[in-house]
Image (tube, rainbow, N blue to C red; front, side, top):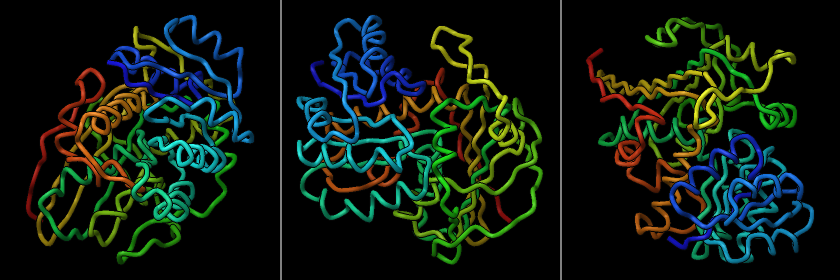
Length: 339
């Protein structure tokens, strides 16, 4: 395999997971980011890779870094700051672009600013990550034969959340009003009270709070749904908001932390309710197989589309989820019941 992939923010926490997975798959790697020293250190693990330092404030350096690649993966948040200059470089070079944005505003901006510019030129897919892409894929798979959906509720349970530096930087930067979908319209999130949700093992019963992220934007772009809500376990938010919570610590050969997650999507149409569940280890690590599967499908003929899109829209969501390794993530069968 000679396909060359450029990874910006390659030495970041999530970037390293993506670099490792791409290397295992045999891709040629262009490792990029602002810090030359960190790139040199990372290259020691991947001696066949190419390193090209670049800064988002320097368009020439970005073009030089990405030239010769087939896809750019932007792993460097906050995406409110990094998406635009890197997408502009992708457009100049005619190279597809993927990012990991959980930020609603960043995804909205990508659609608003590049939907027309990218048509007939390149493919732009934001939010290919645990937050955003995974919820989109699950929601699309569980409603695949429904032309109209009353409600989608996404419940995200974490046993803990040890945030990375990038997560904290993004949180500090993302001061925009959170949006949810109600009556087929994006609306400001209204105050709500916490509820209890039973995630079963290993997360069990957790108090969850309404916290919409980029999946609200991605799902609403292509599914005909009246209402979308996302809930996150309160304990994980407490970890995130505690300045003393440490960064994640690797415990296995894949450098994953001990963190366990469960994502449950419950969809309703008329009197029918369906549920699908995804479980796994380490929300940062699981982003990697999502990104790499997206790359595989772009490069090997699963889509010929250009423009701005999302993973749930452009790919067969059920097939995408089935292709993922169970060591990375397990996907339940769809449960259906009547209300």
